[in-house]
Structures are given as structure tokens and as C-alpha cells.
Length: 141
Image 1: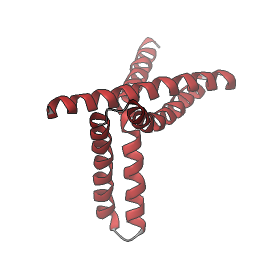
Image 2: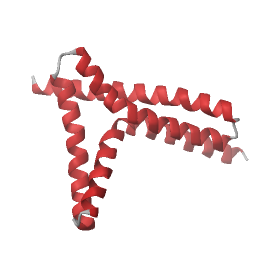
Image 3: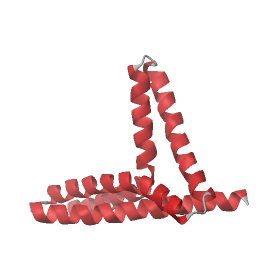
Image 4: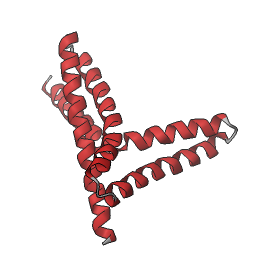
């Protein structure tokens, strides 16, 4: 019984770490899947669709980081950060909602936990994209 509870806590901790680590990649992943699916539907084949998806996701991530690092306007940086944080917040909402429902929380508490999770994951993604762009800016100087 103790081993099962311990492994459950370790597994949940790993999933939370993974969610926070990958949250910044929600927008590039969405772009990659969308363009990969579009390429596949237009006759690119599976290998071509995967190549298009990988290229599109990498470009979306790099362009966002470069734009965040080069623009000095706080309004533009806020908009770019929100562009990356909002999909991450949606992903965080659904991840925490699923975990809360699995844990047996009631409907109201599930939505409360999911909303808090969305804010935390979105903020984490915004901070992470800002720090990644800051590292790129220091390397350019």
C-alpha cells in the first residue's frame, strides 16, 4: 500500500514537472500539428507532413523568441508573451481538470483547481519564454 502511494506521488510529481517544462511549447506544437495535418491532407505524404510539422514548430518557437528578445516595446512583448502563455494556460487547465476529476473532486472544486492550474501554467510559460528570449539576447550582444 505504501509503495503504491509513493509511486503515485512520484508519478504525479513527474507529470507536473513535465507539464511546466513543456508548457512553453504549446503554441509551436499547435502550429506544427496544424501545418503538418494541412500538408498531409494536401498530398505531402506522412514523411513530408512530419518534415513540415517539425520545420513549422521550430520556426514558430525561434521566431517568438527572437521577436521577444528584439522588440523593446513593453506592449509588444506583453502581446508576444500572451500569445505563448494562453495556449499553455488552456493546456494547464485541461491537465489539472483531468487530474482533479481522476482524484474524485467535485465539479465546483474541479473547476477551481483547473482555473488555478491554468493561471500557474500560463504564468510559468510566460516567464519561461521571457527567460529563453533573454538568453538569446545575451548571446547576440
